[in-house]
Image 1: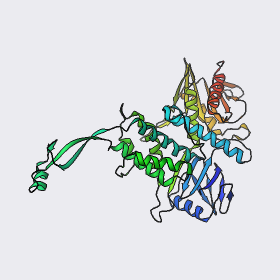
Image 2 (image 1 turned 90 degrees about the vertical axis):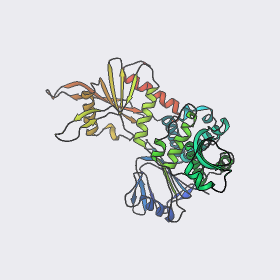
Image 3 (image 1 turned 120 degrees about the horizontal axis):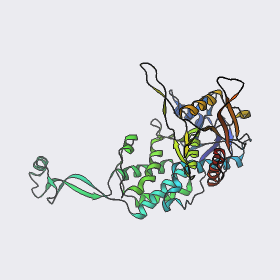
Image 4 (image 1 turned 135 degrees about the horizontal axis):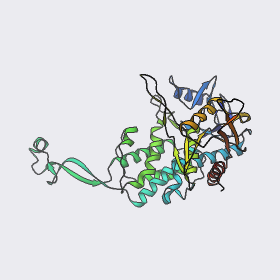
Length: 417
């Protein structure tokens, strides 16, 4: 039985705290402390007899305990209903940002109503591999050395003499093989072995077992960032893209327990500020008649004998000759009062990107608030430069939420929707 703990970002969890589907006991606390180590991790801080989560959301599975960290952008007290809502919001954002809704027939029929973010990714990989097996695994040519009974390929003379002085009916050759034994399948097989190890959802056990019956056994390999960086997908292997993306996410975030072998850690966590930025960007890319750019940089400061510093807004939009700049902030804004640093930053965007309008974009159900920068020469007068605080209501149905973002931005830009 999986020990399932659901919390919200920036929430603290104390030793002995009970949840509807689990408890944060001494074993869990010790495992989190061990994972934190001397160098720390970005996902949470250690506190007295507990941990406090930060701005990262997702799941951390340690042994048989799954801790799910959900986003939250309202002041309502947490309850089971809000857990369900914010889990759906997070899953929808991840699907949109990672492009899962764009892939093929395999995604359209997810059989499992995901109980956690981890279940979502486990089933997505299962679905993708099932789809690849159904369409047929891609074969590739590879070089192989071997002592065989027929002469084909290139005779390796030195090895041939070494091995075949007695067995003159054999030939040590280097020849081409055309089969499914190649790097892409090595990676996917390793990812399937990881699924078998980490999955605690009973609904998925039989499907993982079925994959092992049909997927050819592959040699074990060590996986790193370079392993995926060296992969090049062609026309034949293009369909493997999504499966490899999920495999990379799981394999690189898995930390085996080398001491006792019980508390393996899988930390599938996402920076909520970055996820919000990418979600707004992806949503605006769907709009017509505008061009949307992510994180364009310009040189900002050039110290003598030092490295130049740049300035980079989250999102830049152009419409004809007009330019609009946004910075996204995933946080509750107390009393609609942004930090002075954020307002100063938007002032710089006005000048360096020659923006017609700039805005800070927050989650929330409030009307847009606009303000003028004061004229530098005449402090009693406003300048023509304006900065807005734009609030986007969080909507559980993701397509409607993306539509709401597009409509609100276009109205702010002065365009009728």
